[in-house]
Image 1 (cartoon, rainbow, N blue to C red):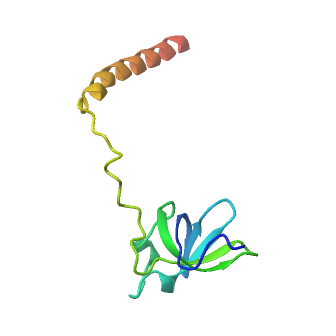
Image 2 (cartoon, helix red, strand yellow; image 1 turned 180 degrees about the horizontal axis):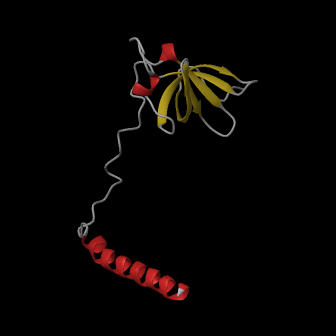
Length: 123
């Protein structure tokens, strides 16, 4: 039974970039390749202009090789970056940066005291 279906939108992490395409880790068992021809209909001079290693992206499954745990993927004609953040999950604090501003002086003073203690021990 296939884990991924052709046409399914999947999420993965870019693990490598070569001249011919993008390697994507989908889960602990499956990896995928986005061939350079599946990035855009336009000429791709440099894949790094489109994507970076470590970036989490979405892609469309073109084919799955169940035996090899490998998937052919495409990012053509889709919004592949996960740039749309659900702003309903982000709640702004009514205090803004007030708490951070108060803590900054405490953190700085504690670090200075810690460094002075180390300096005194070395004498």
